[in-house]
Image 1 (spheres, protein in one colour):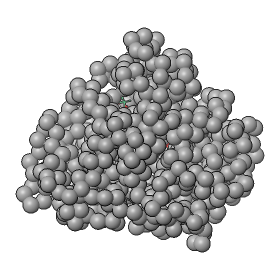
Image 2 (cartoon, protein in one colour):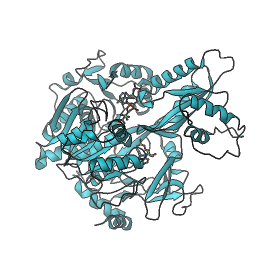
Image 3 (cartoon, helix red, strand yellow):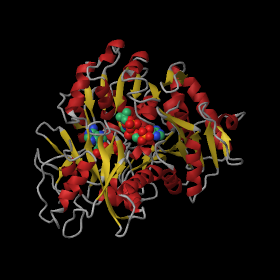
Length: 631
Ligand code: COA
Ligand code: AMP
């Protein structure tokens, strides 16, 4: 079958399409139907089924004879260790961990926060929650205490599972003090914490609250898989919104299982038993879907990689891992390939490794620039596939479904919509624009299985953020166009989200931190183009009159403040002090114009600008920190 036939098959009868895909899942009670639209425009999938995610990701593969196959390969060039965990070992480890959580009172529906680095225990913690029907929320290690505290207060976890430390190439990330700080800051207090002590740093445990990962599991009764309703939340994953308060994206159990399993063959073209590697982090959606759940649900071997594309120890690390573990499909962010290309432009490291098992490289998380794609195509000699998706969708909205048909690649486009997604480009009034014209990218409701049904405890915010602007559609927050062959082009965000090294950040959230500085009267943050990371945040500060401290000191303060409040992942390193911000006569800050100046792009003077002379000061400020065409 070809892509067009599969897409039309879905469009003709979505119900039959998804019920057919659902046959690949082991149900405790099979669904009687796929879509539940009684509550439209709120949709659910397979709600009347009963099923367990951990059973489908782990136990059923043992029953089916894959017990000895590696489920997880941990490869850590930072600690110089490699380790394999078979499916049978994984089942035993997860059942015991789940048993220990249950013995301390964790049950179906309870929330559990997981704050761990790239070690197999992070996946085991996620799966142990799934085994009990507990709802996990994984928090990325690059976030500071304050961000963790906000998530604790929002999802109110009964337990927190953490590691003693994470390892960045240049430093140890002390998780435990960050965790203690977060619990201190939060109003909600978890009943208990479980700490996995890594040998690189043994953390001090808080008596009566913290348990050691191993001791806590000693002698407990392993837990069986608890079947849950199809619409039971499998997890909450927080992502940047337009304010400092992150959005808790909810994922329902059954749709997640069906959709992710479907993608493994149809999009990534892997068969059960193949090795699949997503070089991301479990703290992001790519890590949830393609380090943990999808490969395991599909009976693949997944790689948990604790390292960086460069410097651990060199720009050949990715190729070593692919060669050594016989990776068939590899998924990473364009930034990672740009980092490799910058260090090894001629791809000389490739000569040291046998990559004959590799069939394709998949890129997502940010725009894949044509140079990077072409470099990778030439270096690897396999299809390089851009695909576009979001935390909210959990899997590809538009891509090139290699397992169905390899569509011709058009540089700069993540190709075509996947079955389940009726993608439309709309004008401000919600009307479809002509082919080739720019507009807001929206998806006609219902969204397919596996996508977000709501935000945790924030139904009104969900409606306002995604459903209110274009009734009958899901608003993606991206702008772009479709060409005459139906290929999508993702051009920009329509909100304040920026993308730094494949990490999604809200400029609004950074502005909230800058505004909290006592000397700052007003501020703005923009994302400027960066050759490596795609974008970098830059701040503009207007100081209170009478402030006598040096501008340099205040910039240093705010850089530290963002690192302490949001975390190192914000990569906030530059700010300039200016007298005033450019605004429209009605007071709206002209961020788009500032971005054009920073990127050295031509722009039209906004007709509504209050005082055009301010732009010269903005240009000077940007040049002083190396942007706006600075030599
Ligand atoms: N825990 C703690 N800190 C972390 C972290 C983690 N898991 N991940 C990143 N950080 C820190 C980094 O150490 C760095 O701190 P520093 O300011 O002290 O140097 C900071 O956050 C910024 O990190 P990053 O933007 O990733 O920059 P980098 O210079 O460390 O690395 C790349 C640059 C390109 C190598 C790296 O960004 C990369 O591998 N990107 C791929 C992104 C990716 O996989 N995204 C997932 C979406 S698919
Ligand atoms: P996240 O939720 O962190 O995965 O970020 C999702 C956002 O990243 C999208 O809304 C896009 O703005 C951007 N993005 C992800 N993948 C792509 C892609 N392939 N091309 C362009 N932008 C992308």
